[in-house]
Amino acid sequence: MNLEEIRDYCLAKNGTEESMPFGDNVVVFKVAGKIYLLLPLNESPIQFNVKCDPEMAIELRESFANVLPGYHMNKKHWNTVIVDGIVSSKVLKSWIDHSYDLIISSLPKAKRPQ
Image (cartoon, rainbow, N blue to C red; front, top):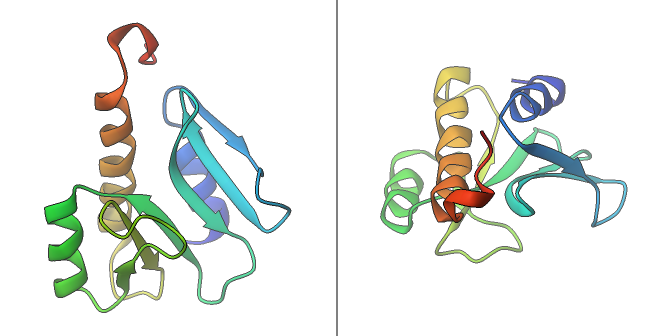
């Protein structure tokens, strides 16, 4: 996946908002004001941070060399994923979905996107 594919995939999710609160180098994707993905624009190879169930976060880090504890994030709940071709786009999308779903499930029903 490239930057545009990641961006398009996130923006296609219900209720997603895009912003750059940390400056011009990091795009943040939120739903109902809560972050589910951070995408630095100046990293090579591409990488992004996603929220993750704590047990799954450890499993992914142990199973994949391109999954690291979340850079500048709570290491218990966030992973940094390096997009280096080791993992398929389908798997990367499933990790983005997991992050989005964690945020959605934490929201009160009235705040969940329709």
